[in-house]
Every structure is written in structure tokens, then in C-alpha cells.
Length: 147
Length: 186
Image (tube, rainbow over the protein chains, first blue to last red):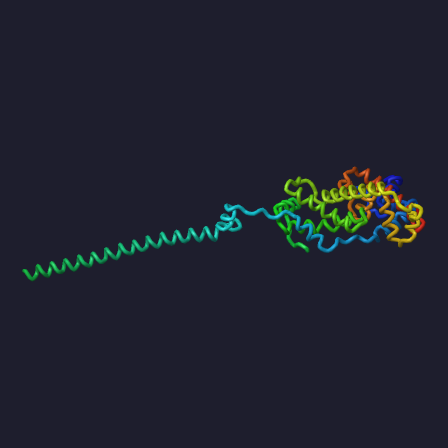
């Protein structure tokens, strides 16, 4: 880096290369280190101003300013009936619990009815067989007494 | 009012803030408001004006969020708006002062006398306040708030070279004004 450029950087950004443009920082540091005497006066003058600027008090925002700013921030949009229904049926985009509970109930009722019907049929068939047996024995005994 | 909510990106944070997510809005305010206020306070030297300008800048941000350009950086946009609002106020104040001639001009303290009555920090504060607006903004952003030359250029809507020139002129002016009192070498 040319010495003229180092002076320009000191004049604009101050004595500390950390405050210089990032793409010129390393080359600037090397130039400063290579000939410190050449830049001594410029660095001292800029450094004093840097220190003064760095010592300035930074104004703190007044209490309540953040809250007043947030009062004016956009409010959430009111959800539509469809989106509220969807949120009830599938909260958080999940398919349960409401949808799953409904499906489980439907399956349970269907299976329960089917089971009851099957049990009733089996009981009816068993009773019919028993009655048939009675009828047969009665018929046989009748036949024997006749014989 | 710290927020622990993490966002995937600034674009995600802005989209949520635009949709009314209070955590996203708080995060934006907590991160940028104190610095925006400090810049406005430095530019305007008035608590009340700085507060008004900061509120107005965020009000414009809230209105702009629904149509936010994803490539735009929120901080750059906010500080640019803050600075432009400051320029407007400073211009109006100057116009008001020019419209109202001083009643007792002869008795008014000269700037040098006023400066002599202040402490060192106040001297520097006053010297910065006397800089032209753009120089004041450049020195505030880079030397006090620590923004890079590229960030400052975006906020000032100027080239990096122009920012460097503003900074050099501002520092020369400050050193010249304060050299006698603050032992700054010229």
C-alpha cells in the first residue's frame, strides 16, 4: 500500500486499522509496521480524536419507547371460520386428536355392531340345534312307545 | 424486553412481524431501536425530537413490512429512514431560525465563547452538532456507532468513496475546532 493511501485512511477512519475498510486493513497494518516513524504524527493526532469520540456518551432511549413503538405494530389478522375449524380438527396441522378420535369412534361402533350381530346369529343357531335335538328325541321316544 | 425466540433468517423474522407476531416485532425493536434512537439523538441533540423520529421510523417500517423486499436489510433501511427524518427536522429548524431574527444579536454568545464554557465532552458534542448534516451523519455512523464504511454508504445512499470524503472532512473540521482546547494535533 502506498504511504499516501495510509495517510488517507488515517485521516478518514482514524488511527486504528480495525476501523479501516476491511479490504485494506491487512495491507494498511503492514504499511504502518514497515515505517512507523513516517506515520507517527498522523497516528497520534487521529488517535486523540478517536479517544475523544469513543468517550462520548451514547444516548439511552427513554423508558417506554419500545412499548409505544410496539403499540403501533401490526396486529395479527383475525382467523376465518374455515381456519378456526381446521385448527380445531387438526391443531398445528396434525391429523389428530379430533380427526383421529372421530375415526376411532366410527370404527369402534361399526365393529361393535358387527360383533353383536355375529354373536346373536351364533346363539340363534345353537338354540335351533337344541330344539331340533329335543324334537328328534321326542319323536324317537314316541316311536318306541308306539312300537 | 429481551426475546429468546430464534428465527430462521431476517426474512423469516420480518414475515412473522408483518403477520402480527409480537415476538418477532419485539426482536426487531430490541435489536435496532436503541441504536436508531442514539443516531437520532446525536443528529438532533434533543431527546423529544429523537424519540419522535425513532417512533416515526418504526411506524414506517411497520407499514412497509407486508411488501418487504427480501434482499433489503432491515437495519440499513431503518437507519436510512431515521437519517432522512433527521435531515427534514434539521432543515425545518434552520428555516424557522432564519424566519425569526434574533432579538438581541449583539448580546448572543459567540460560538467560541459558548464552547469555552463547556466541558471536553460537551465541546466535542457541540463541535459535532455544528458539522454539516451529511458529515455529522457519517461520523456518527462510523466513528461513534461503529458501522462499516459499506454499511454507512448504504444508509447514507452514497458511494463508499463519498463516505470516506465525508469522514475525512468531518474529522478535519473537528480537529480544527477542538485543537486548542483538547490538545489535538492538527
